[in-house]
Image 1 (cartoon, rainbow, N blue to C red):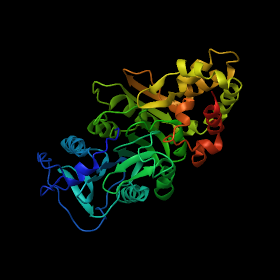
Image 2 (cartoon, helix red, strand yellow; image 1 turned 60 degrees about the vertical axis):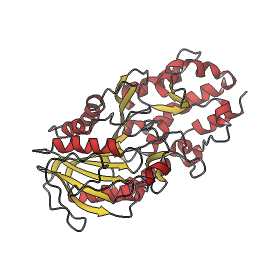
Image 3 (cartoon, helix red, strand yellow; image 1 turned 180 degrees about the horizontal axis):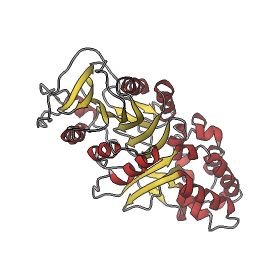
Length: 397
């Protein structure tokens, strides 16, 4: 979801914890969650049998998304009875303790409250992931990171060198792109990662995660609140016998809500994404030979969001545009690699987005004072020539 800074208003609001609910809901959202929600000390849940899938939802609503989060919790709780998957949620809103809960046949049961947590700290997410794996064993693990994301639009330009996800307004912190891999270095990888946040399905972000998940589901666009139906997602996850690929593809295609706005979700094969520099660098060399005529590419390549993301293009569209130029072999190889190997599924409504974005800024944007393009901090910058190419764009006239 795109970020709208309302920090002063939000922190002043009195958001109460209506007893006996384990989740802190907004004051006018006191509809009963099915089932009894109890609390007991410590962070150890009762021993659980190993299931096919454990779904872990890291729901950071410590911002203005609290009501949307409450609705998602209700949707999940309505489907509690007889659920075949483990479902675990870490949930936070401004002014209340962070809670960890798991779904029982009667509803959610809260295991722990964390009074001073920071959901914008990667270590908090790593702790939740480790705790979930320990207490809710499964043959496959699916992690949903729910909240704000910014992709490559830096909303804290004076604070960090890269963009990120999971914005916590209470602590003014968020998980930076270069920190994402640290989560999984601590807690281990997952089979499917769902980035339920805006603009995260980019080459820069996903290349950081290439060893962290087998498949990643997310959007290139600003996505409306509640555009992912968590109840449907968990029902898909509970389907017996699905491989990680089938699980990711079915989630990308089957758990999205049509919200009246352009919508795009894709499933990316991360083992294949590791090969991206092999296909991207030959295209860079071809582009560098014609770098001062690059505005032809700007005109013909699909920009994901010209108003809010003017520097971001769809990578498949860029490759297809280059394939129509002289010496197209390298671009055709990139295009076919993306469509046949990397993008396992793409679900789009009202947009030409094909599943994976990359940064290609206009020179005036690259050189703007607020624009931070520090590819040297990112794995894609270190392992490909794309960042050096962008520096040449910045010098172009």
